[in-house]
Length: 180
Image 1 (cartoon, rainbow, N blue to C red):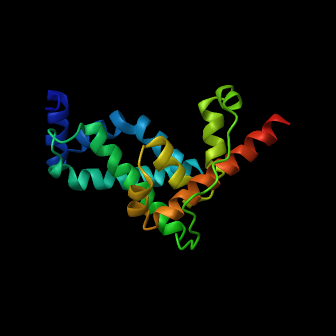
Image 2 (image 1 turned 45 degrees about the vertical axis):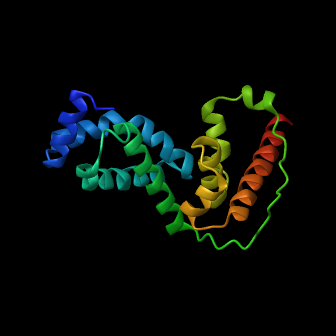
């Protein structure tokens, strides 16, 4: 899976610390990456901080990018998600001792969710605590399993399951308050 000629030129420019290439790469991926950052943070300022930290890592490590392993988008996305996780770790300790192997799965009203815009859903998710929001995003949005989430966040599988269950419970409550 070779990158496009434009990607190759951008990468080469970034490796050579060409500011125009760095700016172009940033502009090209800003939209989708800031959306990811917003899912993991509470506000726009934190999202931009995560985004900038992620892009600093991208620029620093772009010489290690391998087009045959992943698309440039996927590679940058992975770095940005890891930057979001680092940000959350710095802000909130994951020392939760809760272990639930079989957490209850609260039902979320699918019709209520369908009637909401993506922005409204994002606002609900942003109300979750950082740890719970991180697990919810990694599981639901990014497709990680509980073992992978546990490894990424330094928590047990059971704690990851609890956070997912807690996210669903809180989102269900928030949806009910909107419908009243």
